[in-house]
Image (tube, rainbow, N blue to C red; front, side):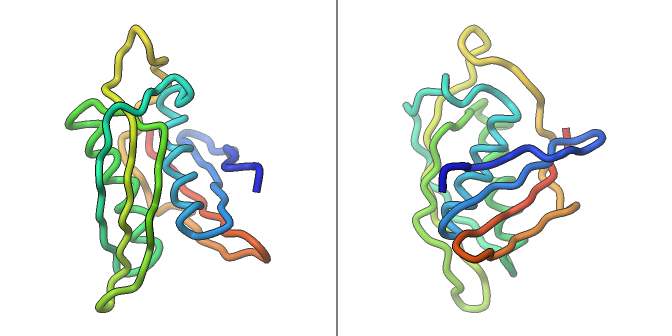
Length: 143
């Protein structure tokens, strides 16, 4: 799959669809799209590696928690990310569990373009769809 994500029309916030051959890849590309809203991810080096594990009661809450956890690191440690590897998504003891690695660096205004500040991930218009040979996830970000 060549296209990782596309931005969709929305009146006030950022709305995108992200794609992947697997659910894990679609979640990786959703994270990439979210950071592309904030900065040019091609200029973000991968000097810092963060290991993340989040849970959700369903796939939608897992997607929400994944993106919110990344935002936590941006808000608390000024980190921006450009590479994501979702190692696995599995159902375990009634919950969905995601284990991943995110790579990036501290935001540097002299190096990184400042685009939009993402305040929060929303459930508005959120979708997770299995198409014929790929997954599609849709997310609205509150700016």
